[in-house]
Amino acid sequence: MEMMMMQEQEEAAANKAGSEVSSPNQTIYINNLNEKVKLDELKKSLNAVFSQYGKIVEVLAFKTLKHKGQAWVVFDNPESASNAISKMNGFPFYDKPMRIQFAKTKSDVIAKADGTFVPREKRKRHEEKGGKKKKEQHHDNTRMPIPPYPGVYGSAPPLSQVPYPGGGGGGGGGGVKSNLPEAPAPPNNILFVQHLPHDTTPERLQELFGNYHGFKEVRMVAAKPGIAFVEFADEMQSTAAMHGLEGFTIHQTPMHITYAKK
Image (cartoon, rainbow, N blue to C red; front, side):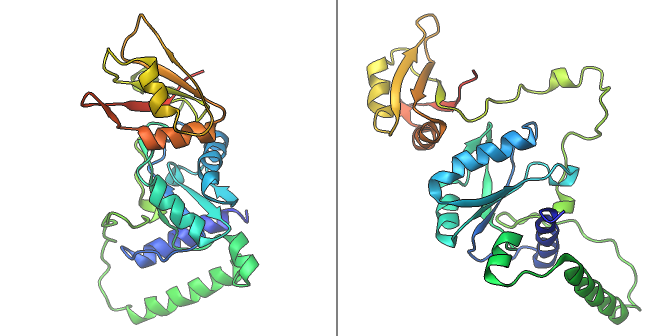
């Protein structure tokens, strides 16, 4: 229950702040995440990808329908969070570009550490009191429907208004699953490189990927020109190489790099 308090804080702050830009802090907010990835795997993968930018205190993601495709990563200092945003915003993660910004509210663990933590019940009573006062001030106003979230880019949306593209949740579906794209591979130490010119040699790829720590080897398939597999010592090193070389052009053809499926 305590971990869920952060999502409520974030939602309340987002509703209140609208398009307001968040100030730098230890927590980053990520959306546009692939919703087909299981929660445990998502948190583990986020930890692996972002740990290269600093010590991670916790990774938060929730199963609730309205919070799918979103997560929070809490660093131990704002500099690490800022570096992660500048390096990873727009980075393809499970075949979708991540959208990252500073969170509008700090996590419970950070609030407890700096002495600003407010227990859930006290915060709830304070918000209810403020809401009651507002209601009395506007008692004579005509009831109007709440306008939809304006969707200003760069602002964390109210979590309750994030659309869920999958629709209803039943298991029946008759053929619906067959229309969905196959889930991408989770982060691992082997990269799958596509869209290579057919005359690309292993030596050329070794020159490019060999500049990154942990590089081990390049494997090409003679029967399938235009693709290659590049192996690194671990997934953090392969992620760094992917980030650095995604879209790199060889003979005016940009490479496309994803994690290989094992």
